[in-house]
Image 1 (cartoon, rainbow, N blue to C red):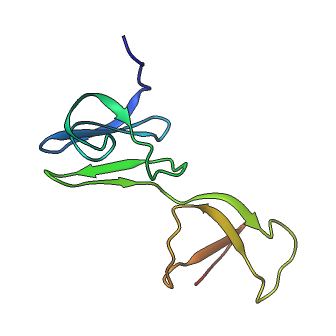
Image 2 (tube, one colour):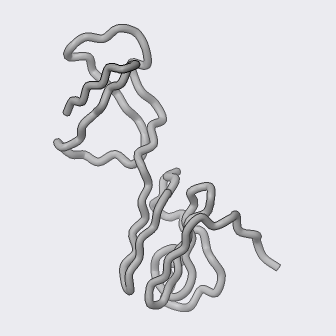
Amino acid sequence: MGNILPQIEKAVCGYYSTYAIDIFGSIYSWGKGYIGHKNLTMEDLPRKIELNTENRLFSDVFCNKNVVGFYAPVRVYSLSPNCGPSHGGTLLSIIGTGFVDSENIRVRFTYGDFNQEAS
């Protein structure tokens, strides 16, 4: 009969296609369109979108008649140094998904009641 889908968290519709996010952060598409199934014919059943998702967990989807946008928040896999004292000029290494190469990125450090933001 086919595969059973996980519980759907959110679904949106365009003119000719439907998109959904499941409770695990995976995204699906069906209907007519290129996103997800790379075909201009109708896809009757939801198909998981795997191309260009690179282990991202999606939390929201927005759609209008012809355009869809998926949101995947920043996900940090590794932070170095991960402990110990540091001083001004310490090199901070962050590895994860959802980061953008931009001069406008700001980092907020929080320790107890102490908060400091830096670019």
